Length: 228
Image (cartoon, rainbow, N blue to C red; front, top):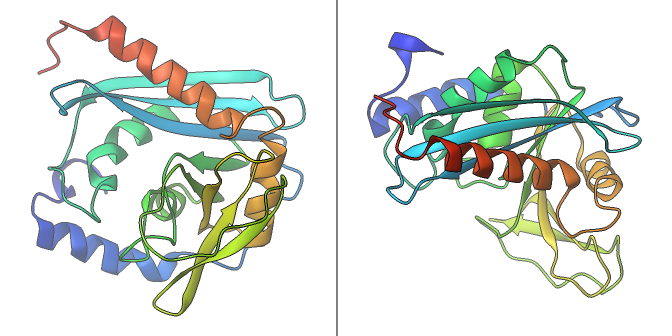
């Protein structure tokens, strides 16, 4: 899904989601001891159009940076709730394609199944790449939940329309939780275990922290550059 077949309208984008959604593997179980884990994040300029997409691959055991890639460009789709992934996917796919390392797991700054159309960024990236993927959101997109316990590792079910679409996971004692959902080729319990392994010191996974830093630096460096 590149080049000329990239959707241009809401109807076309929703049709893509409908076509790809049945390909999502929500069972997994996924890698329980991945060697490398990639964080993906996108930063936007003040105009909301120019963006930088970053991928940071970490050693899953030491959390040391193995490889990075970044693409600077413009959003590929208008801002439409539920279709936000279409703005970012081309740039993220370009960054992933430039890696020499194939990560064992993708950790997206966003959502997977916990999406109004059950096909968030983590699902979309997982299906297109074939790689296991999970979504870790700072805030919820859908659903209701009971507050999890205050201790690290506590969680509660994130439910939407009677369906469990993720978990509300406490990664630090007494710190507000994150919202974990399956993207592709992972089960929910393993997804949460991977998130806890990636958060030894901070609320957000180290993958997200490193990718966020990289794309913001790249966006700052590109300021004033003609991207057309």
